Image 1: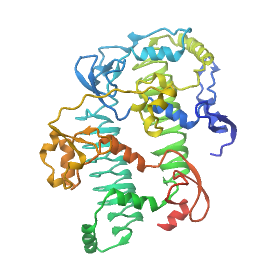
Image 2: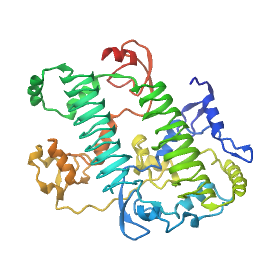
Image 3: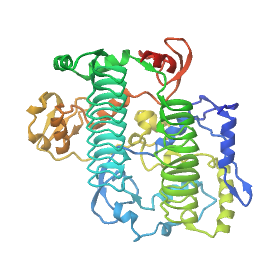
Image 4: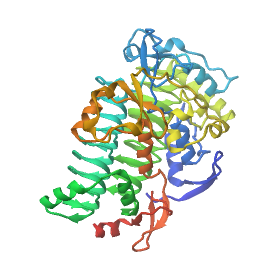
Length: 554
């Protein structure tokens, strides 16, 4: 996918330069909507890719849950919307029910107001789903799909008995893990696939009973290892007999500090790509013609994405089977849509809409199901729709809204609640100066028998009493209290793991720090001096090899 730079623009927010290519222009032309045989062209973006992603991420709350009142029943629910926000929130059962109709909140478009102002007003009227979580069992404190017995488990699907983790798929009995698939009985693992009974690993595949290791594949019973394939009974990449290995492991005082020191000095591959063609990014499998995309598989012809899609630019959120989409976030089966977020299933030809399901030809709509030809939730005939939408587009061109995603100022979440603050952290002062919003809401303190500082906890899990389930632990970093749940305690005891000293949010940030940034750097292979792209910045201590040199090494 050879691309030719047509124009270099300056981001209107951060002032960095970014390129527009011929392939970009082709895509914008392909996805531009047509009404009555007239194409309403989507122009090139005004923000750089990072600022566009930051803006989309500001609409995405993955980890923050609150107790609040359900506006349908008056009962307490767990919600991603804090109780101080001006939104109506329904529980799952009532939100999906036929007892109410989102079309009753319709408004007529007012050409004297900005479109985003009118959408924001509608957003405050239409009830929102309390949590992005469906088809789950016993997983109230989760942001997931089709999962069972999960707690503080955020984003992804088909998991069981997983806790304090994010972006897991088809995993069971995992704690404090991130971006893992088909793993079982794993703890504190990142970017892993097909592993069993492993702890403290980063970027590994098909391993069993491995600990404190980095970038290993098809290994078992290894500790403090890196860049290994098809090995067994290794310590620090040194081969042992089974008997020797067992003796040596008993002498080892394994801890994260030793692991991080090892990790920082190891040799790494510039990009982790498996069966990929013409891809420049990281952690991709079975992909073709992908640029600026992180951790995905089975996709092609995409830019600046984060999901299983085809022919899509600037896509965000998690999704399956999506094509021809520009700056949207959705769940599954989306076609030819732009500037939308939290679309659900089977939508096509949607513009500037949110929370819609099995619908087509909508503009500025919120939570419509099985609907077509609606604007701001108001039903129109097809010919009326195709006359009014061009008028709205022309109005948005005059107000400089037409080619932009929703502004962060109308996000239902404040900046420090969102994924944006994880990848683009800002202080409260910086946030407010950039026209984002900041939340000062503090959840009520939990009722507990006592609070114990983390440094007062016994080191040995066998010395931890059952009463700890009634205590709050004071985080050693943030001093924020947190609790241990019964299933979690059973997991630590089964695997002889110590009780955590840090709040789940701090542990999440610790995992984030162990992952590479979503940014590509230019540097040279430390072996052959070849120019390479990598997510390892030039000032880092790892030795970075190109793919050819790395394969020879291992």
